[in-house]
Length: 334
Image 1 (cartoon, helix red, strand yellow):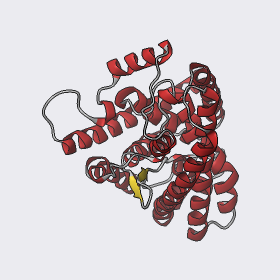
Image 2 (tube, one colour):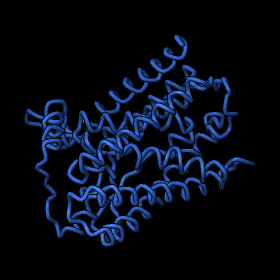
Image 3 (cartoon, one colour):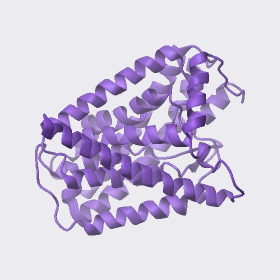
Image 4 (cartoon, one colour):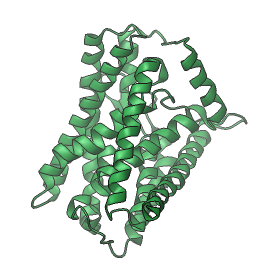
């Protein structure tokens, strides 16, 4: 559900980026005032961020539509890291995708952070997942909460995309038609994401349930013991997902691209504003693998996809862990 620059106006871009930065600053301050940001939590932010990056590369076909979808990962991150670290991690993932892989667009970054991060890792987690799993947590509650929260989070995100596009008024997308296509397809995507999220959380619950954020008091400094096994499993899963499973991703357009194409009768969206052109130039200079493909050389599609997946996962681990330590260091300095 990554929005492209072509869907939004400069005014909406500035507004949403401001909202994203403000809420991210609040999340950072919240972490600085708590004792949650342990070395173990910072490491998990990096590892889980890489895993979500890899998972987002795998689009699954939605039967009968000609579209596809991928998990967002915001709810999964929140259930393991907590809403504030999850939101920060998701923002980093989306920035890496926009900068280095031309996925989402720089102007649309703020919109994507709100739609895929704030509405899922903060709102859906806090208002839906957490209340369901708060007391007497069980595997049944984990899966039920995951499906409901992921689905509602995707509905909120899809609706937000439509509203942001409509307010921008730079594309001819009838809001009723666009909304009627966006919501149903993302309900299906949300259910699939909920099932996947529930499966991952169930494994963690059975293996080392103290890694589920819901299991711990808000201000705990407790670090789970013997963490090597579960971290190794996540890292190996990331490598397999990014380097192998990504090769079998559906080639159908994702839910947003499909809805736009259906609404516009397959007309390609283009913009000519100075802001959009500048954003495109910056992306062309920085993106090392635009559209997850190598810029030069004679490489197979499989090689390019696997390379992009592994590279993106590594960058995500490095930047996320670095960000975590910077936040922690800033707290100590204060």
